Image (tube, rainbow over all chains, first blue to last red; front, side):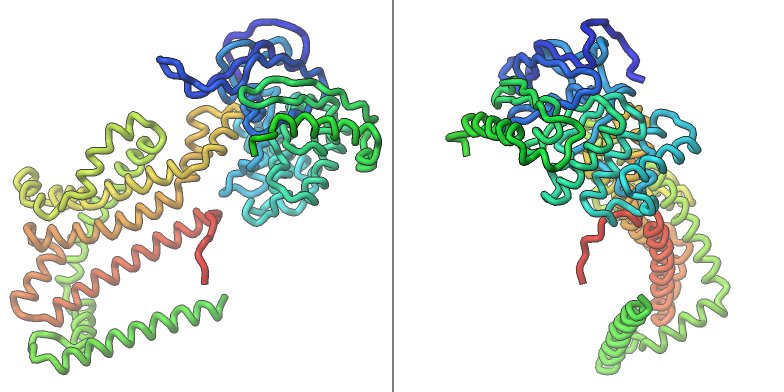
Length: 268
Length: 256
């Protein structure tokens, strides 16, 4: 999987260095700079959330790390190996769930395993475990259209976890859900992650979500997208919903809002 | 569900009875002695089905062209549509020809095809294909275009190959549109089958129709047309049943 040419560089889990991405590049130039000089690292088993106003390229950045789109300059490396495409150590959870409407829950959860050539029996067993883990036992035969949004995204999460990735890339996964469902899924994700740690990069536009989930929050500026600041979140783990009342939580959230607000003044 | 079926058929029957009543009314007020009553046609159909051996023979001959022609249309039409939907270069290549085939009246082409291929089965099959395949292609292409880009991206994120993307995402996603194309294609195939038999190659049901109208047996003309319609409905119903089984997942946005 992900065959091709690799170069060893640094030692962090994910390392992004001097990354530039332009859209609409043609022979006579004139492209739009989407990401400019992005530099950051994500450590083993670290949970990093990325927040920024719309148009800051946070989803583009995630797609580049996923190996779904190419980049123009700089370097993106996983475990010291330069990213040239998708790889077995990474799995993506999508904002719009991206479930196959013709396949039932079981069929959707086994998709990644099947594509990677796992024997059918093993696919089934693993998928059943994951379906149980995300609390969808008994829904194996349901089609996506028969599920609520929250349940659909739990299928998306189970599908990503089924391939046992070391890195989970989440693109505003709860952005399409109502607030109550979103909070329940955040709590579920935290429990899952604390039970079995993975490296997570989580793109969001919700300040609560960014602080609640992340070990660090990466704040981005728009047009072109740049890293404004990496903010440590010194809240203890495991986190319960109670941390929202803590002074540290409130302080970081206020700080994020001050910055995000300043970026968008005069734009909306 | 039971109630729904009863209601559906009740409504259909009511429309049918109203149409038959209008027909009878029109015939009884018309001076046209050739116009058969509905009862004459029903009687004619009965005679065709049970005491006219030539009807079954004609049906068999016509269906050869229909089935072969439709099968070839599916075998050509679906792959072309899939390729045009997925690859821009193929779409650009096919676009003008698809345009020609969609808008070209096929009937005037029949003499040319006969000159080229003769009066045999080959010519009739070719006309049926000409009538049908491009509609299957156009629908299949639209179906592929309608497959959500995010699903293809999802498949890629798990490392799916192009072949896996085709098998697992593109073809299943295009299935409802492919079936729609096949339904239109089947209808067009039947038109093509009857048209070529009426216009040039007198054989099968077309020949039977020409004979009946030559002998002014208008009840049998009507009955033959009715038989073609019944066969078409049966084929479409079979196709719809298959479609329902395969595309049970498709979103249902109809109301009422």
